[in-house]
Image 1 (tube, protein in one colour):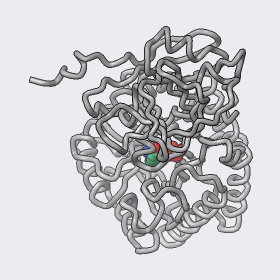
Image 2 (tube, rainbow, N blue to C red):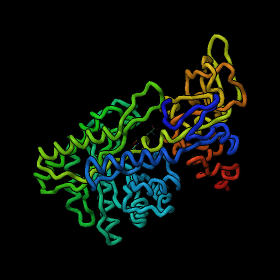
Image 3 (cartoon, rainbow, N blue to C red):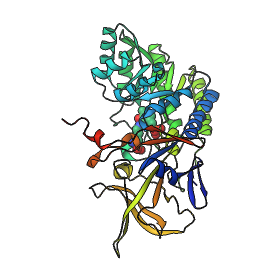
Image 4 (tube, rainbow, N blue to C red):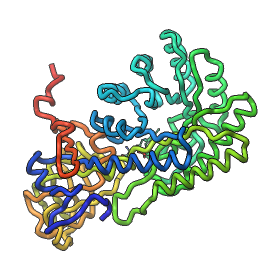
Length: 431
Ligand code: LLP
């Protein structure tokens, strides 16, 4: 099975040791499940490997865009990770849980003056400043508030990760960051060093998402360290921090490669240390920003089957009571998923179909070319695996369908951590 926390017992699918179908009957359909122990295990993998490989100053930051709600910040905080936040909404959610905001890094390519002021008022640790305009705006607002604001500068090392185009961010022509190649990275560094209310704490890069080859990380680390060395030589400034971004891939299908994250981190650390020695640099405090690889395999979505449509000579459709509103990733990226019939795990799967949602849109597809048991029928329960990342966080109310609840599983118990939206919630802001 692609996820360690999935087992089978008497033809039934167990998630984190609990009967998935029974949970659906208890909490209603459809719903997201999350396995707390798996989230914690993933946090520890990064925390332990980074501390061991890069030293005490290293810290993983959970990229909370992957899944953002109060309980996730509490869990991640109790595992001692920092966080990457990208909006006032994420900042507000984290603050509500008492998250130590000095360990929060504020990303985004376009922060408004209001965002900047809100982040400073809430004690944000660092801005990851994307461009010159932002550095100037942070300097002005920090000055008004009488502080010197620590920032990292987001640079684009010019790497193509060969993953989905839409989530590829490290190339020179990316909308994110300032490019090293064009000289803009150096110009913005010089500016940040001159401004009185800015404390330049180092540099950041992020080259893409769902990346499997460690080569990408080595190459971007190399480019960043060479840049740091060039800045040191020219301006006498030694960057205290280097943030290598997120991006490690997860398995959505049995055919996806298995990746040993701890081993990858050790490999990156070995390379970074060697490169620092060669360039005469002290080892910077390393940050990494995993999102997907912390929460994806800790999540599962359960649906109930409705209409089954067979179009002879063409194709078969199995409709579920959710869709692109709770999982837009196939519609957006053609993303892969594994789908199982939760109470028919002993049956042969030879009924080929598209699993589709209930929205008024042909592109409302969860997955194509799925093989389910031929006996699949209305009322059956389907489980979509590995939905912990970028599903709840990208959910919408398209067609005014209420968003799903999130149920957290831990050691045989379950609890609601995000309530199901009601029809009343749907009209809450309508006047
Ligand atoms: N750091 C930065 C600056 C990022 O932009 C991202 C993701 C991460 C860290 C976390 O990357 P991860 O470890 O999760 O790959 N909605 C897309 C993914 C967008 C990723 C955006 N940035 C999807 O559903 O696949």
